[in-house]
Length: 498
Image (cartoon, rainbow, N blue to C red):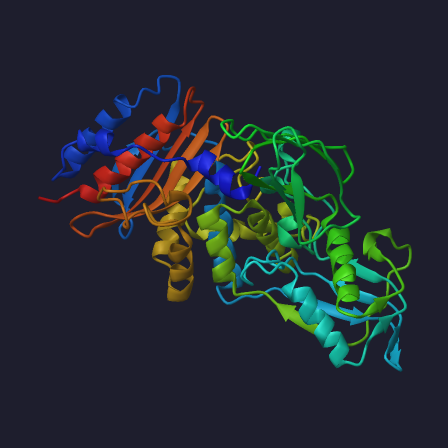
């Protein structure tokens, strides 16, 4: 499924104008509580567990509380914990370094040895920060090699991903997720969100579609084209499967005439994908490579490193990466960030660079924010796992801590990363035409029968509030849940107005 289409499915077009207009603007906190109670009662969610916590962002005074001590699955509200801890511990100006090394010598334009790429978890190598130019970084490396006089490499292109542990998936991820971009494999070397992008272009009816590859066709991925063009009046029917343990896909999607569909398919072994594409780009740029792409984990003898790399590439600052995580709900980036914490702040008794080490390294931070960490259960960094359990009180405590953070750059990096109601990210189509539009800054969260919205809102009296709304175990459409969240957001934003 394409990333753009999935976001539309998850977040949709909320229809909240009619539902929110039926609730009178409130003047007192007592009236506000009654209005929220009425909204919950009118939401038609009879089977759902609902928790709501609203507090003054500065003082912590409770404005509204419902079931705030019960543990809920937070879905992507987990990212609030991941990004808050990362900004606090690493700082908003932190940058990932990816370095290029050799274990050989250069003479006569020939590198007699291997070219080694050592990753530290940078999730953004690809087109995200280069105007969609997927291989920009690799071409710049080719230029750097030529600048060093290298036009031929006799050895292999080795990917060193040992900065992270060897577990490529988040704990508790369901098997049916694993072909889709939001469950991409995790690794210290990542390229193009660890996906290959296939664009299916409809032809004449009953003919196979044309498939265009991004970045380009590679023998690392095998695709059987079982697609078919169907009549223009029909919708797109997505259908793709992968042979377990391989990068062999069968794509059977039906695409209507005149349409095109881009599908981002996850790759197995991101490190090998990274060095495969790098090797191909180097050859395209005129650097001959005699050896093969190799994952360092497949070597019985590890290469030796000299005192310094040939050159390094640095990511954008963490504040910009966190913005992608929260506004676009980018799971891979959140998982990379969690393991980065586990590598930079390894916790005793845990594997360095693991998700478990990452969360263990954050517990002092969460305790300083007032959380009862004995009841805090976090197993992945993105919220895709259903084993994550938090209370709305915990979410609000994290939000309040970041709102009052003593470092203004950290506070700004966190608040600016959140989607704005009716403006951008996963809230771009929600809350339009209400007092919450352009006001609410909040993180969405959606997995099966789970929906969450937590963040910040300013009342009409300019009182800054934090809020957390989580709904679990609901049946039927998620639209009713989103409408409730948006209605409550509007009640809060309208409070005190005349």
